[in-house]
Length: 105
Image (cartoon, rainbow, N blue to C red; front, side, top):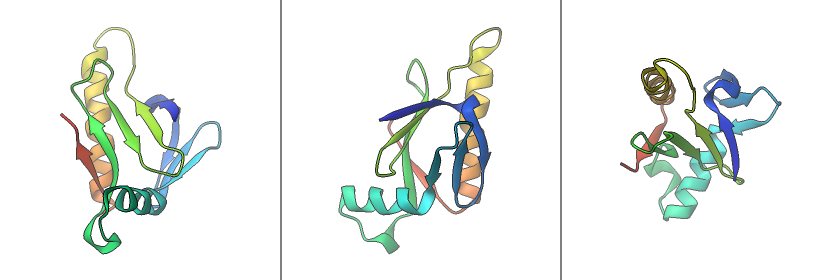
């Protein structure tokens, strides 16, 4: 499983996520993999990731062929608030593009 810090995201579009090293996640691929792994029909789900906001380091796991974990691991003053804000921002962006994530908390 690949791991990236949220700060390594260069761009998020309605098609997926592009990281600073050039690696890309396709939301449609994640949706297909999520449905296949959970035995759900493709038309019955819009889920692309699982998320956990209560872990010591909050994260999203995107269900592409090689799963990708996005960590919210900023350090320094007010790091908990900044990580929470970034976490909620990613969740909001996914929802805005018509996708969802499964809450593991």
